[in-house]
Every structure is written in C-alpha cells, then in structure tokens.
Image (cartoon, rainbow, N blue to C red; front, side, top):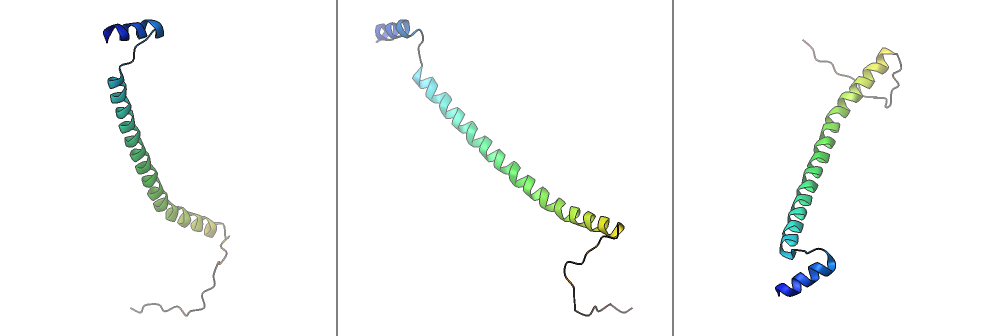
Length: 86
C-alpha cells in the first residue's frame, strides 16, 4: 500500500489526501450555504428599506411639485368633503 502511494506520488509529483479533500469540500459547501442565506437576508432588508423610503420620496416629490406650482390632479374626487365641526 505504502509503495503504491509512493510510486503514484513520484510519477504524478503530488499526493492527494482524499479524506481531507472531502472534508474541505463539505466546509466550502457549508460556507456557500451560509453566504446564500446572508445574501438573501440582505436583499430582503434592502427591499423593505426601499419600501419605507418610497413613501417618503413620494411625499417629497409632491411637496416639490406644490412648491413649483406643478401639481396635476391624477384623479378628480367628486365626493363632498365633510369637515369636522368644533
């Protein structure tokens, strides 16, 4: 057994420890899975953050249009407005 391994090592110029290689491959797969989970979590958090800011951005755009007298009614409301009385 040892002679065979020595012969292969001398012919190829290197030796591979299959058990250690398999262990390292499992560790790499474990890390890849962890990175996928973290990446997905980052994307979800970024999407939620964008949702929060989108309403603020819409409000700021509306105020900017008002300041520049550029408001255009998108929909006309025909319902009568009822104001509270004091």
